[in-house]
Length: 296
Image 1 (tube, rainbow, N blue to C red):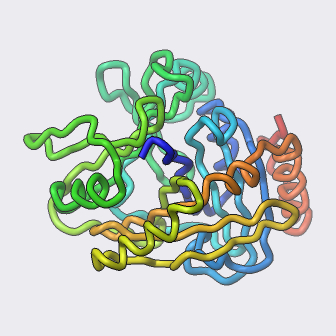
Image 2: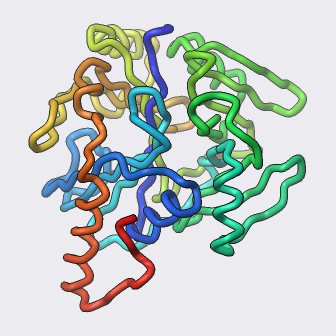
């Protein structure tokens, strides 16, 4: 499965400008692209909502070789309830720790040079006060599972991920598609995994020709397919094919055709300005000026 890539994690956010400030000013990421949509996504990328929404991609570098985050904003929805499903994203960045201290952003000392912090909306990040061991500082996404072995069977045997670490005593495992990619950490929790309304989605790419094979495999194995293979349009950009799956605990997983996605995901030099313009437009409508926002 060496031709599969970990792409991004999708967060639903209630305040995209405050959230963008956290990613840019604290974590030190860049706005890679910003897109506006009039109607809900056919693959429910923005959650179970039919109205106007936007997507902002943020990361440390181009999506071709960095794991990034997708901030989806549904107009008119100011907050989401968090469950126990998402346990955090780990980032190795001395700069991020320094930024947080300078900005007096809350940091919780975890020991061993690791700090816990939260993005607006409550999503957890773990910042390692060190230089990244790879070109991409985003090291892993941690998700909760109710049965580690059942989840390992799904992610490794069905989705083809390599198991890098497995700790039965601590009930955790680390998986990935390549040594230099962001990893997926699964950690068992007591009881049921609750996704509430703030649930996210993790995305991967594979060669487009593998998408229909993946769909057939999931059907044969009686696994959940949330959205069968479908084409998604982005105004003025490439059309991509995706399939949306759910693992045994209901974590949403997107697989997208790699060839078209590389075209769609090119960095837009206007991304920051597009988000900034939308902020000023919204501020005028609400007659609210948020002075801490700057376009960088």
